[in-house]
Length: 195
Image (cartoon, rainbow, N blue to C red; front, side):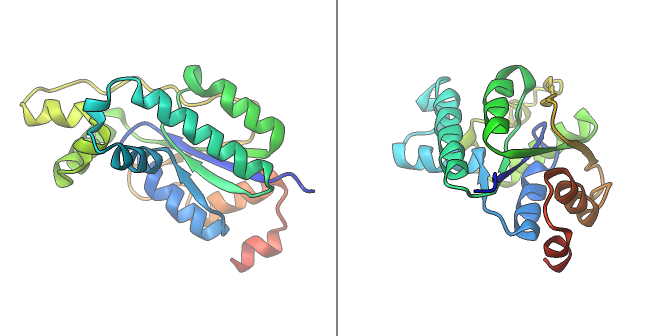
């Protein structure tokens, strides 16, 4: 059986990675597995807020998330996965995926201050987001506390990687990102061009 493809879309919070991941999944005709959407489903099931569930909830979600990704990849399903993967924390699980699948990484890059501003605006616009995600940067902003942008270190693996500037749209554009992925993983370009 051909090895499936895992397209990893990542970046700091507020970098636009979720929006890009949804657009890529649609363009590539692959399902999207989003870590934040897993978290929302888990918090919904528990019936308690992210904060009430405690700090260990993030570890629980990543465990469930990677188990789910592993399962679909082992069944031969190509997927787009999305999260704020930090190199030091997620190098091992991503390397394990690279043993089972053809992996390409797309890193959403944006000025940290702009990303932080976007994250705060997103949190302020969605009052339920704090319940599902905690969002300490939004909580601080509501209290008038100015917090510095969080440190972010994207995955640095020996797999094809493309950095996309998401400051204002996408540079390179969506079609070029799709072409990079098709070339990186050996997908038939005729299928890519017709999708």
